[in-house]
Image (cartoon, rainbow, N blue to C red; front, side):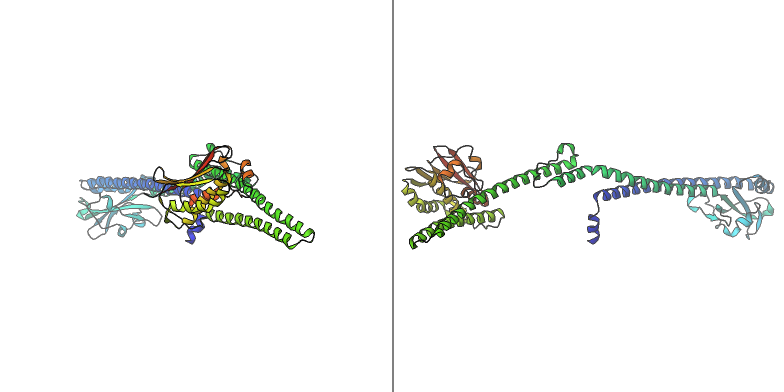
Length: 473
């Protein structure tokens, strides 16, 4: 939604401040509303009780023998003595005509302003308010009552209680509550801004650290110990990302250097041979020899490029896997037969053992075993032996092992043999035409199949490379 997207672009500090302020507003406003409502309710109840108690006193007085005299003293004499008028009294006859009332009452509260006379004047729900022309607020009550005196004409008592002071107090209290609410919200907004800024300071430091990182400065790290628990995982993940990034860039730099070296050698050979061939006129046989030599370098370049393309496709998960049930023994025998001529030239015997069926990509399976067998032939001395075996491994795995009695691999080289273009000193002497990509391709093929490749070797004793395929149960 457009609104939510605009809100999502707001700074986190601003959003936290807004939520903090909104929550403070809701808490303060609800608290003030409850307090205000309870105070008004209690004041109204007290006012109702006051006027009801006053009515009870007046009713008792009106039932006495000296009704007219007592009422006159109550409404006229005592009324005149009061500095602040609290209530007005009025007696009406059955027709609604005024018999007696407090001084100036008619000009302030006319008889018609009162509600219909009721006997249940003590019920709080029967409250009736009237605001006079002078701005004062009154509670009005009217009732039929027994009145002695006045020639028997008195029937209705009207009383008005002045609650203007209470009304003013409530109004001022309400105004103060609104001001306190506004002040509280303002203080909450300021506090929210300060708290959010301080709370997000670790993110600012992480941002500053990230801004300092360049391709030449990958050693910057964030110490997760100093961050809050909520940011600890982020700091750890960020440092882990930097570790992977640093490792990847170092590997890419090493890979680029090795790639340049591997491509430079055949290109230099082609340039030297072409330069020699062009230095003077040659016979057709000599040109033919140069072209034949160049073809070997072209083939080497083609193999390197083909291997690089294969590794690039596997890295980007673009290589499809065509799983097919294959006869492993037949496949390795066909591969062994292909290398038998090369092995026979060196007096090397190749043997195959074991039988099994496996769901794998036939083309990739042949390429992986072929690379291992080619390495074994290249690094095995004359009259040596190579054994290709198929056996059932642990946890429903199938293992294809290629063992030789060759020169072996030094322990310091074993951790690096699956790196692209990596070739140890001994390997460079025995594999002058290799590119150092064979084992890297084998590893990629096994990863595509969800398996692993392991190499165990002892110098001058031989090497065993094992392909471990995980078979579904």
